[in-house]
Length: 287
Image (cartoon, rainbow, N blue to C red):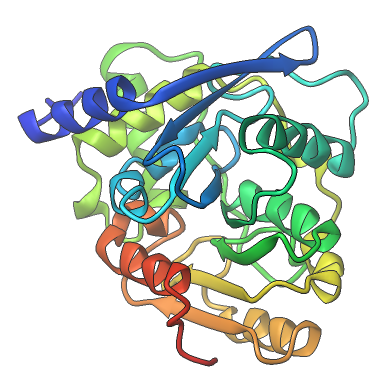
């Protein structure tokens, strides 16, 4: 495995150490939350991707915490969080997350929401049921659109050890997560391995074909959908997603980040941080 640069070690350790950690009921165990930023700032909820953890937001937390009280759970069955109850569906899964969020921020708080990949689908479920307390929703690398995509066959990891295991992680990052293989750095490898080792939920089992697309018309908060130009779950069919969003929610923002892949907020962190901060400041340009 690549050696983590000192600044990456500092980043990983600093985010973990600087967070306020919460453990709330989840299934037969607990859902683990991490929080950054001023406790009295307006809250922002970040939802990570499938087979992931809050670490999917490692390069975004500090920028967002300058404006918001950032709360990022490990979703049930992923990271440090226990699996949800057996038989839970997507609305129940989203409700479990929102129950924890409301426990932490209070019932009256207005908030912003951003979700990545599987987390974008959950965000769509939450946003479709939300009232005026939801200020904005941003969907990054959103699945669940029920549109054309090129299938990706990932390498098996758990039956491998040593260099072979690291090679499989790197291959999976290149096939699915990162648009430019040269950007697969030590931190990306470290996060990918940590997440993979702790993933127990089959997120695909919760999501029916086209689930997010069906939810979009019910969303009332200002919405932005963002993809990396080389997102493996959308490329080269980006126009279909833009048209679907325009049909479901006219006036919403659709943006494509040049040269980036699926894990767009990691690979193109500077661009995504700037976009999210504009939205938090209410300065997002019209679609």
